[in-house]
Amino acid sequence: MRPQPDPAAIDELDLLDPRLHATHDLTPVWRRLRAHDPVRRHDRFWSVTRHADVLRVVRDPGTYTSLQGNMLRTLLRGHDPGAGRMIVVTDGRKHADLRRLLTPGFGPRTLGPVTRSIAEATRDRLGSLVERGGGDFVAEVAAQVPLRAICELLGVPVRDRRRVLELTGEAMLGEAAPTSTTARIAQSEILLYYTRLAAERRAAPGDDVISLLVSAGLTEEEVLLNCYNLIIGGDETARLAMAGGVLALATHEEQWARLRADPALVPAAAEEILRWTTPAAHVGRTATRDTELSGRRIAAGDVVALWTVSANRDESVFAEPDRFDVARTPNRHLTFGYGPHFCLGAQLARAELQALLAELRTTVSEIEVAGPVTWLPSNFVNGIAALPVRLA
Ligand code: HEM
Image 1 (tube, rainbow, N blue to C red):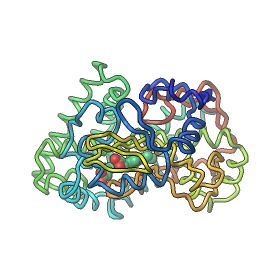
Image 2 (cartoon, protein in one colour):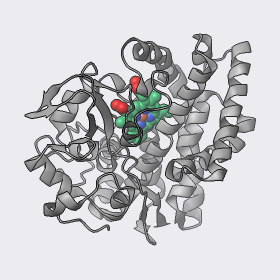
Image 3 (cartoon, rainbow, N blue to C red):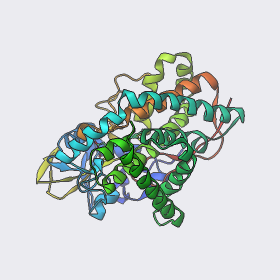
């Protein structure tokens, strides 16, 4: 367990520092901010920590735009390379067009087969981990299933999948260490791969998401940026939810016993894992005009960080918010955001988690943490990098 900092020393904490999030459990800091300073001014940005204020901001894209970026890293750099072209960092008409275009790619016709394939992949990966009595749950299961699902969604042919999965894994390392050469080479190779695939789909379209994008007349760059959005948006987040969920079940034995005893709890347990793990710790916006939020004056151009990791523990919305409860209902978590940019992959992520829980229930009786758990150094992606487990 990570130590909790003294919330009274909030002035000395740098919420931008990735290491702070890896080495500390900030639960008491968020609690104090919600109670005493819910819209807090830092040097270069505002921290918004209450559920109701987060909702106010994301529901109002006219006042709080995504066009300058949607996470602190890009917002404080001053621009996002995908701005105006990649769905999550567009607004208004362009956003509505992209959303309309992509939505069928996440509908029942596509998700049906993908969900079946997820169940199969989960059974395979978890089965082989159980056979060996355990191992690193992140590398063996959580890192494998979401990427496979995205490959299916994008229509990556089966023959290329192993290579694409390897390259994507290497490219993702770049998110944690953007200067890594291996990561940069892998990123270029993967972009090249998708460029070729997009050209093939232009000539012979199918049912997949890339075909949807190319047939709508998007530029090559727009197609690539939006593929990249799906990979970035859907891989690491789902991996962190799965891994954090298994950690939560391993450390809350009574909740694991409840879930094992009652299959009807699987959907509620998946929602609680999403709330509990909150894989995207914040989403960011930029004010387009002078405005006011819970009594604080926000100026045009100000950057606001909406800490969903705090909103998901807001005591005015969740009873006993610091209790992990697999039967929690209602569960109005903001893990997938809210409003116009609500996560397009939410149903897919839910299917991944539910498949994992269903499989765990039937094949595993005991989950034990078997070594040190490492947390990712990031103020944005929230979760664990390695989870050694023993499974009986
Ligand atoms: C547990 C897993 C996931 C979490 C925690 C998550 C979280 C989020 C959040 C918070 C947003 C809103 C961003 C904002 O308001 O600025 C978002 C949007 C988005 N997510 Fe997810 N996501 C997950 C899984 C997925 C998956 C599996 C996919 C697709 C393969 C996906 C694709 C997207 C896309 C395309 C958007 C942009 C939607 C828009 O701008 O209209 N996500 N996600």
